[in-house]
Length: 448
Ligand code: XIL
Image 1 (spheres, rainbow, N blue to C red):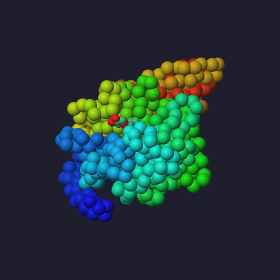
Image 2 (image 1 turned 180 degrees about the horizontal axis):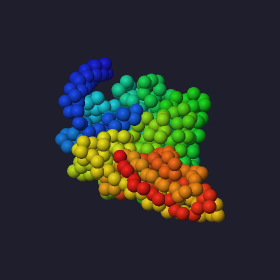
Image 3 (image 1 turned 90 degrees about the horizontal axis):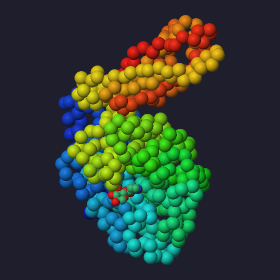
Image 4 (image 1 turned 180 degrees about the vertical axis):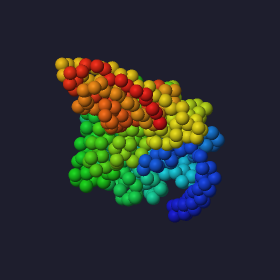
């Protein structure tokens, strides 16, 4: 089909479906939030990777359509899928995903134009000048087909080596064209679809480390020289060997401070239960804390089709049931759940407990720490009270915000409000004794 016709017919269908969705929403005042609607309330998109081969499965498609606002074709836009032999483009599988998404008003992320993997063997046989032409033709052929239909493209994927060297990874592009291939790809991409955000995407770059710093330096160089780049994608494939880094937010922020958007592009976290839920909470909170973190994509709908299915790393189990990680993400996004779930109708079961310990002691003062633990339901926020003995006063507080009424200190979270079921956070404070060594009393914890 010719491009113009494709776009017109897609736009018309999307409009009809959006109108139908509005009518449905008006009839169900108590509808629970979804991942997509809760994220939209925070000005973010929440997406998933999609495989065309599963779109015929009713439960898969129902979950996809209900929960997500953006899709990334998991494999269908890769070079081996779209240009298996030189100059012959095959878009059928990717078109299925894009058509499906557009008919439901979802956005599409493009993944990926230039990558060493899932690359057809003919590319590796070309000499430098032919390779340069083939790379540019691939970019203009693929981006041109979807011109105006993709919100962000991963222009170059995984061009840096793992480990401490900060070096570029060997690939046909790197080996024959040198470092400059990345910049050439971005320039060709801007020309092919000026409306798309152009991203560099990689893994093990989620925290501050030698690899992420090498990418950071490249982005800084690009922005200073006017090489077109709009965003950096952080794949965020986590497991016990590669846990959610403690400086995730700081790392996202330092890229954002270069003047580019940041996106979490392939999120999955191996594990289960409350530990997995707590890790998901950390990731969502990190994105929400960075203004230029424009959205998150999980790398699949259901554990059973995950590329790491053994690690059950996603938000829905193999039967499409919502996992604790789902509740945690929804709650971290500020969403209300369904009946009996946090913020949903009949809710009120969210509870927490607070326990106190003295963590340091000296002549004139001490440090106290309160551990706040969510009950059997995830919580969106908490409040704890600490009553100080006469004469004592608080001189510092961390991981919380305090309001004082006489000797009663009411503490609410600063960044650490959302807790998955059974998980904990702490806040701490320094007390001046003024001659009294008595312990403070920690009152009831309330959760919401
Ligand atoms: C993975 C897909 O999920 C698998 O189905 C496929 O067999 C291999 O690729 N980094 C990326 C993604 O950028 O494209 C990869 O996706 C996962 C790692």
